[in-house]
Length: 206
Image 1: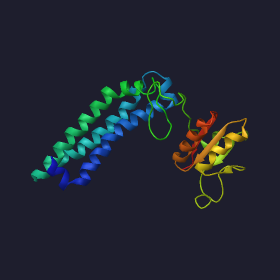
Image 2: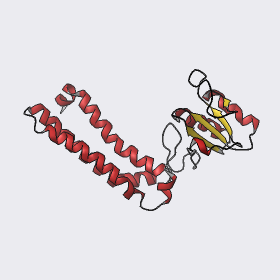
Image 3: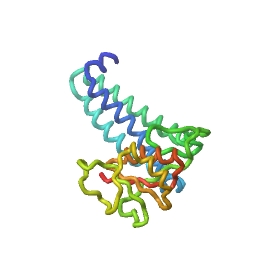
Image 4: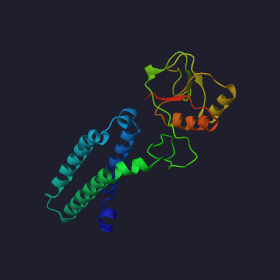
């Protein structure tokens, strides 16, 4: 097995990435408000996971037809690994996501927390750009080089490290944190929550 990993590193990393995707999709579904509040959310996630598994297994199964022992060895290794990862996620995933944060999974960037941890139980929701209202205080975390013109008229342009200063202004309405992917918005929200602000929302502008 070590020989296979050393000689076919890219395939090994691809296999690890595909296996990790199963748990990522499961946790993402748990984070979704719609999935979390409606019973049977796992049943709606399984078809997509099953299709992802099936297409991957089909591709690796085709590799078993190649008349090269090393390629067939990789195929068998990949088939076994993907199937095991899928079964593990399906069987243990729901229980694991229920344990995290006492039944809630934190969307705070930087990791998950367990029940009894000092982080707040509520997570900051992502909203669509068109859900932003005129009463919101919008903070555009993108640089001027990245986005010379903000997507929101009147938005404040701040860097993540400067967002904490908003707490001293005691804003009355909701603060909407916007960036390209959502990562900086999550980091900024973490800083604001540490300073006692909880009326927050996030926007990923893409």
